[in-house]
Length: 100
Image 1 (cartoon, rainbow, N blue to C red):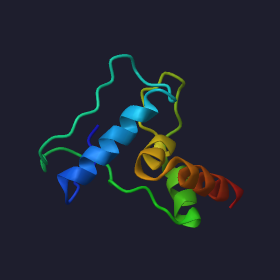
Image 2: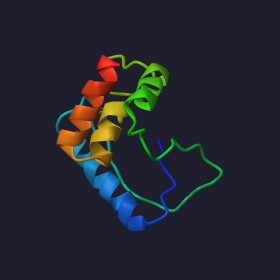
Image 3: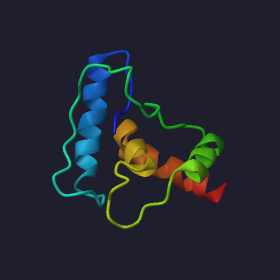
Image 4: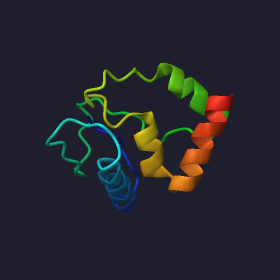
């Protein structure tokens, strides 16, 4: 799975580090590796940013494929949000979206 592109490599590295932290708290396929690399426009990419508006996040949640418990959908939307935003803010935003 490719996420991007990011305008700055430093931002890509920050997101990659956040996703690596999520590996300790989220089900994922054993051997999952998170790296950064050059843009490959010939390959599909996920939008790099998870919405920060609770109502836009609800729409993204509705369109996020459900996991099957195997971790094959890592990074799911919540893991991507936690990689993008500070943990307390991501948790609060997720809670507000769930309430919406």
